[in-house]
Every structure is written in structure tokens, then in C-alpha cells.
Length: 305
Image (cartoon, rainbow, N blue to C red; front, side, top):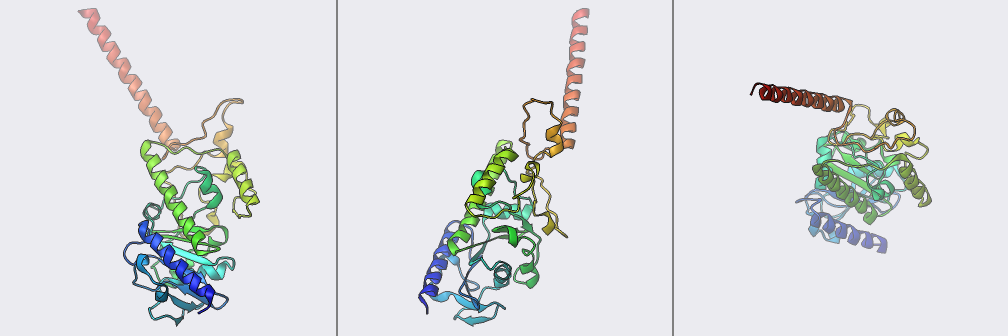
């Protein structure tokens, strides 16, 4: 066994332990792989707890998914990994698991909002949601293909996440960043609202991203489009996730309606929309009318007393 393969086996086992310890892979959930070369991929076996793997447990498959080495049977979801490797020659490792907070977004079909945390903008960027297909099938593997060219992490509807990068540890990092972000979003939503920063601040982060040599599909977009959900809309054909818990940022039109020099609040409360605004105004009008009626009754009672 080559030294590079031994090192990769140990690294995959280490990442498996982290997934298990963080609760990202319960029981035998999840799978990890690394590119061995132009003909082979090293991967985790099926039906094994990722927290207790040993280097000799791992399998080797070719790029058609055929197992060529290993005493245990390869993971049934290797087709997902292979689809990513074939589409992205630069990707050297893939991590698929079920981190709880990110998987909650997968179950809710809730798009991941942007322009909230700088670290997420720089290291994750767009996180699309791929449509649901039965895990382990070729159809399931192909759900990520519309997105993989312009991102490093994809949410799998009603399933979990898959992240990929230049090595196993970085592929895992993307998953960890995403789940921490989703947890923060849920906690902030419970407090009442999620505040976003403006398009010009996002532009500064994208410039930093360029200097770091990282790609982002938002390079070249206008400021008003930078923070909109689903920039990778071209990948959504039969499946279009729509935000429910986390409203999209205001449109360009709504920003330009403010009077010149006015201080505008570009933050949007979760679930806010034109209909929500009309409903709130109707509530205020009804309350004002009730106050007037009560006041009139009190004054009338005082006059007749």
C-alpha cells in the first residue's frame, strides 16, 4: 500500500470520528471518500459507524463504482461522490452526512440566506438545495450536477448535506461551517429576526474572496442581487425551494423608493412580505378604531354621570 493511500485512510477515519462525535452521522449514517488517482477512489464501507472505523475497513472503487479492493462492501452512495469527482477534476475529497441543523433546512426545503455572517460568505457562499431522489441511485447522484461547478456544499432535500474540496479535512470543514450557521440562524430566528448586511459590504467580502483565489457565482452581479436567495436559480428546474422562515432581502425597487438622504433599514424580519405589511397596517387601523370607540364611550359615560 502506497504511503499516500495509508495517510488518506487514516485521515478518513479521523474525519469519521469527528462526524460521529459532532452528531453529524448517527449509527451507520454518512460516507466519506478521497481521490486516489485518475482510476481509483478510496471510500468508506456500507453499514459501519463512522466513529469507529479502522483504516483497513475502507474500500477502493473505480470511477464506474465497481469495487476493486477491500474486505467490506463499499457504500451504496458512492455514485454521488463519483458524480462530483467527474464534474469537478479539482475536487479531491467528498463528505456526505446528516448534520442536524442543516438537515432541518433540507427537510423544510428552506433556502440558506446569505449576507448574514462574513465567514459564511467567504468560505461557503451559495449553498443550493438539490431535489430529492432515492439515496444510492444514479438519479440521486445526478441531483447535485446543476450546482457543483459553482459551490462547495449542497443541501440534499429531505436527506442531508454533501461537501467537497481539495482534501478531506476542508470538505469536512464546509459541513461544520454550514451546520454552525444553520444553528445560529435558527437561534436568531427564535429571538425575533435575522439582520443582513448590505450589498456593498457583501461586495467587500467578495473582493476578499477573489484575493484568496476562491470562486463565487456572484462575482460580477449588481449589489441588489448579491444577497438574494438562489443565485444558482438555473439549477432549479423541476424543484424550486422558496423561503418561508427566512425572507429574502429587499429588492432593488424597494430600496430606491426611499426619499433621497433617508436612512433606510435594509434588514427584513423573517417571513416579511408586502402581504405581511398590509396585514400589520390593518391590525394597527383596527386597534386605533377600537381605542377611539372606547374613548368615546368613556367620555359619554362621564357626561351622563
